[in-house]
Length: 382
Image 1 (tube, rainbow, N blue to C red):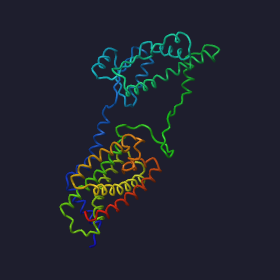
Image 2 (image 1 turned 60 degrees about the vertical axis):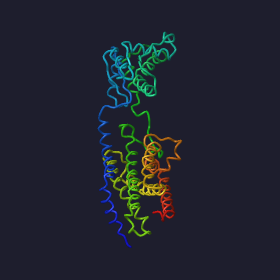
Image 3 (image 1 turned 120 degrees about the vertical axis):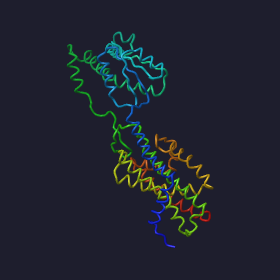
Image 4 (image 1 turned 180 degrees about the vertical axis):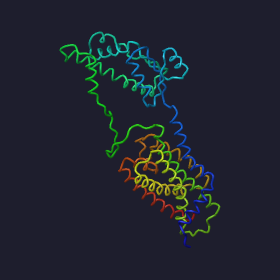
């Protein structure tokens, strides 16, 4: 019996789009992106910090800079120390940074302490008073932001002290020193972001969108796993008894590809619409390989489960496992061997690493071979 595969694809697609659960999976993609976009446009951060200036001009410049900076730390300016401390006690604020009126003098004391000179050797006053309810990792990271903001004052004071004490034969005006200091500042980026192929990467971007790429790939795979569940249900109902035994392997994979292609098209549109995509050619090639490997992966998962109930139970466990293990949020080197079992790992890692693209090709060949072998071994049950 000859089958028109293209016609079969459109018929299965029409049938699949009548299933509410599959429509929900497709709707998850724009809903997730829209939700993240709305959240990213609102004020969001991981630590809330109150900034109090008691009258220092230099501290005012630092506070203005921190308030204007894009950061995962949220800064709020308070006019007085007491309301800020009250907000800290009420859990509205995580930390309070107080810049005293004599901020410049305290920075000078820190410099003298570093240089081992004058009164600074005996007692150093803190340049900024920090109040926190508890000491945790996030607050420790926020202090690095404070040190970075204070660095320009501290470095200029060290520079001025060194010039006055070690080099200058006569007093040099502070304005003249500042002009020279500012003209010597390196204006480039302190860090150079590159991938494994020594290609330069852009730094920055909204941190909320960082895991979106991996999550959308998991939704594509969820569509394939849902289709494998529909297929098993149809087999149990003996809907496709008319299908010749020799064509069942092809028929199942067209069934799975229908769902995977629908989801992948929506995801690719999302990638390009949100700026998450790389070059058009690389995205299309990687998505093509991802859909093929995902199809074989879903087929293998269907065959290793005993019945529809066990498959339905396994799917959410499998999705949660991939969400944690695959490099969606973070890359855990110790779990690399486990990560290599799942298709999303190869897509995510192949973006910036040609070695993983080679691994992706190998993975695709291996999954196709395993799928064919498992089909030969379970033809009777299929």
